Image 1 (cartoon, rainbow, N blue to C red):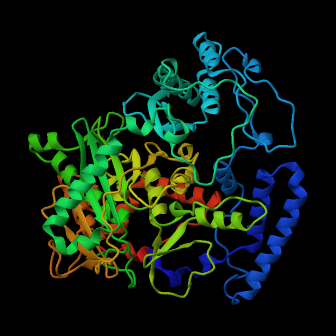
Image 2 (tube, rainbow, N blue to C red):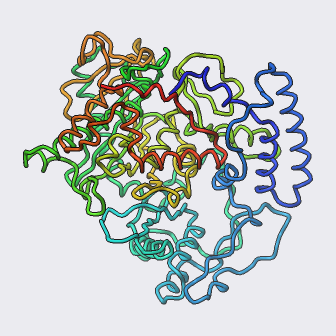
Image 3 (cartoon, rainbow, N blue to C red):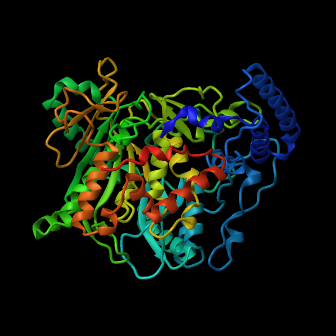
Length: 621
């Protein structure tokens, strides 16, 4: 977090770089016969961008300024994952266990008179399944072939195992149309993927064998082009099981959030207008789902950044809910380190068998619910398409880049419309912060002294106006694809299951207190109301920490809780820290992971993460 005036050099556009990226994208996605048209379109695009830059004021395209990191091939690769497959880009079938894959597909004669489609298996699914049972088809190959036959989306997701196994193991799970199957582990990635595929097929094949799918016959006819507004899954595949219906969590969580929100609002009806944008963290155990942290809000502080740590700079709902989650984690750390056996037993933490840190108890998982798509790259317009003969490719690149948030408004880090001279406080967008937390964990630097990274398993979006979550998937998962191998021990890119669920928050567009936000965590006696533009508690708030109206979510309050836990844990090294900044810097592994993440995003072409002034964190108790 920092004043935008100190970061003017970070926001210059590189026109030539944009043209190179468009050229690269076009060359990737278009058939060879279209290259002449692409070249012509690129030249027109270059002229249009140059004319646009010339019409701007002289400071918009600074010759000497640049934003670290080019927007090159890696942005294109992410966009490619979200495009229909072209015939000339299709890879050959995956090898079978005995090399018999040459019989699985018959090569059709090339027909250039019709559009290219993804190839379909020329052997019936029933025959493929029989070959698999006879050991003639590799499990991973079979999943890919069934995905083509039934036109469902299948991916192999790297994850972590909840078991504490000695040595280094890899973990993968198969995800089919958003439904996650059992996790497979192995000493190599290949073994882990093989195990995951076999486990998924154990559950999937019985549904095929008992006729719950209508097995299509092999055909030379390509699948029809999807319409712009696709019908529901049940309309397209009336006999196909809906994976979401198997996941009762998707039903339980919205109900739990609605009940908790209603309980808080019924006690304080005057603040019901504050619940327009809501986020909540839900703890799932064998006994059910419980909301443990909740936040609402939609604004950043409008004044200069606080040097005392007693103002909340970012009051967006998901950021507020995450800081409330941190308070919940601090509370349970105090319970764990208490001298009372009963409290220790009730804590959500246990001693990790693989490190000196604590971890969440086995069987406990966290989930995030939001009633609106977070601001930033997650809100990429659904109508955008990567068309090499249009300007939309440039727009898509801007949309999936990192974004800045100023007083509730967001700008791409490559935007030329952002006012660099403003002294208002700037922060990264809510989407970018969720992306960061899925790599670094939701616990933050200070809690990393005591616990292993805490990740969420799913993000549930209860937005009744949203029908397209590809932007959320692209920004949270695909932008950081492949980073895990570069991260220090215990850190990984945890890809969450993202899905649409029922909305639970009422429309409060006519409310008068929309700059206000509330926060609450399990164990709190009452909710706190914070003015997002001022960054502090309002006078009428049911909970107030003192006459200074500093929020219980501010950095100074977090440092106070950190010191309490350090004392209970008898960590003299942490008690001796002189400032908030020093305590954070001492979390070496966390800081290493953070540096890897930000360098990775820059190298992949998504722009540079906002670097806040170090003086902001130099306060002490």
